[in-house]
Length: 266
Image (cartoon, rainbow, N blue to C red; front, side, top):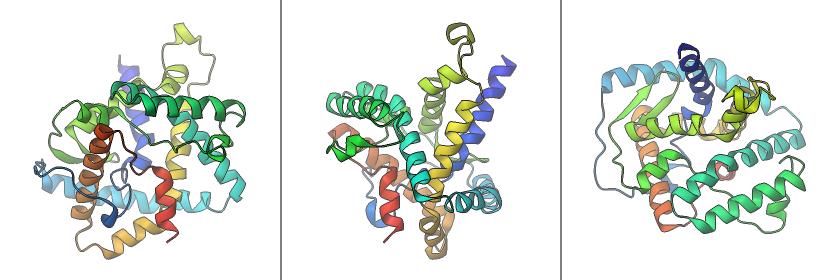
């Protein structure tokens, strides 16, 4: 039991690289709140202190790693991004189904099968070349919201960054029910440890690094132009989550990670 808890906490640390900014899936002009109900904030003074700590950690560790990643050859970065985006389909697919989005599930499954075979394990993206719709990542936090679970209070976690009570529960589900986690870190009796138990960390670390590297300038601009960075991140996080849940209910597309790159290049 203790070992399993330690594994979950370790995974949480790996996930934190992108989680610290996961709420800002675009800039303020791209996000419109879909809820008039204010979200209660728990422990604001404590959250602000933790937020400051997380900012320091990002500047001293995560941002330098991301900037180093940017120096890699473009084909390497492109293949890495394709690879992690393809694997993320394994978590998006069940959430498509749980949200009742049959069309989205079909698109997710079709892209995954094509990119995993013709695209050489997802390193290439022939599905997009053939005109397939881009994937919009779905998670269990969104699924809970689609089915009416209340947001709960907003707070900041050490390293993990901004979240709400609902999204925190969803994030646990994202970890434990992720097929990649099941194969690499899950039940050893079922999978006979055929994969290295560290592969999940490598995968999530690469995913987070790819995401952060695409948004170095975006986050710098947000920090420079915000009078109160804490309040800006909170606003963008909540608006983005509300927008994604609203769009999931309407079965329409929302911003995905690829949109960050477009914003960054403007």
